Length: 226
Image (cartoon, rainbow, N blue to C red; front, side):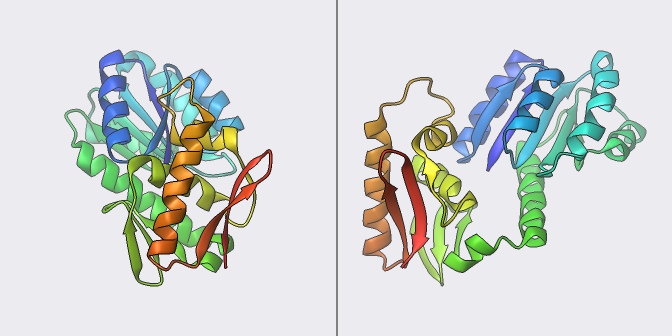
């Protein structure tokens, strides 16, 4: 999943960024809600996690939540309050959040709620391009699945195939793949992308998958079926 992480706490940003990355998510961080709104309006995210919201930020949060809830691609919006009552959580949910936690919270529970919201979103959209390929990613095992066949992905392979799946049967620019699969790197050698694609192709062929990764000359790659 592609996650936009919003937090004014450097320690919380470091912790969640590391935890989400280790769970094979692509994470982009923003340190304020105004910048997060700009990013969410111009880029596609599966979830927006707003963490460590204190009393001094509640007004800004309630201003931002309706706008986030109305984004055309409808990412899941998850809020973690620094402190609060059940009434505070209810207000956050009414304002447009899909889930609300209060510290101390369980990262595992947050991630499972985020994945459940993502599954529900995919079911509602019934993405025809993905269904046509009979491919899906299992976030719990980090497997790529096709018609009952499974193959384990590395973290980079998982993120790269997830990016390709979002635009199955359509070309995806190499720069877009780099931003998605290497969000923690500022300068990525194109040969790194070629290496991951080569490994993916070998795995797909070895395990008898019908899907294949095609090269689009001078542009990038495309996920297609045989």
